[in-house]
Image (cartoon, rainbow, N blue to C red; front, side, top):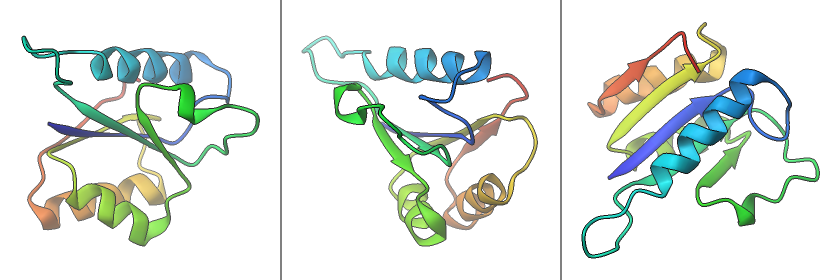
Length: 113
């Protein structure tokens, strides 16, 4: 299953919300089926620049500053979308939800990271 998580702030930006999203996304990405295959392909979409953070070492895909077209492609490739942090609509997260509705992709929103 392809899971897209939108988090405006993400590693390497420091903070509680960023840490929770990182832990949650990494944990979900580690779930395995009985035969050892990944159960979820997790992509985190964020506006946070990578800085010195090495996304290649992460068990999940990180799409930084994807833009509207990139976001549209990610939404279309996803089975479920989660928008969790921050709990308010930003321009980009609002676009993600709008695109999810247009693509008939299930999405959930939370005020918790």
